[in-house]
Image 1 (cartoon, rainbow, N blue to C red):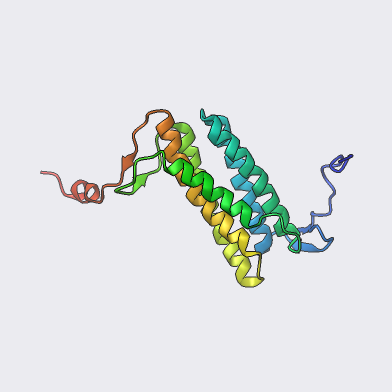
Image 2 (cartoon, rainbow, N blue to C red):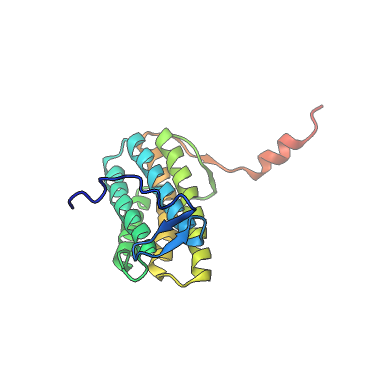
Length: 190
């Protein structure tokens, strides 16, 4: 690799633009950069989940996902280069199905919460949904590889199930959403 990153600042972005992998420049608030930034934020939150998690399997899978997300961001910076393909989407599906098979089927929606790692995993899931919205917006402006959209969509499902698994691994019960709770509490007390 050499010294590719020996100089951290370049001053080339001081005017509000940033360099793409092909040498072109785009504004830092472009849809492409919003998508890249949201994917980067998601990757950072996964680092927190990995740190907080007590599940070796989830940690290992999340590290793999971090590499995938770095590749996904790279693919956004180099649109003609494919790093996230159908096999990566299928890997998410297989690992998701494996985790989900270990959980009780859901009969009701659950509230985000429980173990600290699960809470952070649910935060990662919401960031993932924002990254997905950014990719959809970018795709409306300029077509992107559909595997990117499939991967990020599947990843939000994966993170939901991982959050459930993290609670299960610490024997923490899930809190089910109760629509009637709001109605009861909004009544005027005697």
